[in-house]
Amino acid sequence: MVQKVTEGVNIQVETFYQPAQSNPLNSEYLFAYRITIENKTLHPMRLLSRHWHIIESNGSQREVEGEGVVGQQPVILSGDSYQYTSAANLTSDIGKMYGTYEMENLFNKKKLTVAIPEFKLVATPKLN
Image (tube, rainbow, N blue to C red):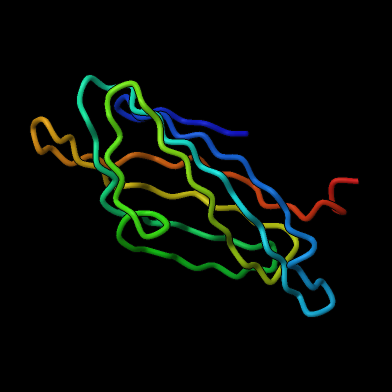
């Protein structure tokens, strides 16, 4: 697990290789990741959007942007956390992701960019 705190917002990431949904013979690897966003500020925060960088060991790179996460723009109250699980398809068995969330302090309407720490995506057989 990796984590990073930006302006009072703590991001934790856990990753899981999904062998049953992968097909290495066709260079198809599926990775799930679970993100926990903890609001350590004094005010409620809304997650507005995400911006991902996905880099694979075969040199492939792409960016993904969009509103919210998993179809939601959650409000996270002070002291609370929000957790979601998503997935990434790769064409290589090793990669990494990192990015940012744009969040809004609902007390003063100030927007802030929260860093998502870099995390590795490694097919389980590579760990042996």
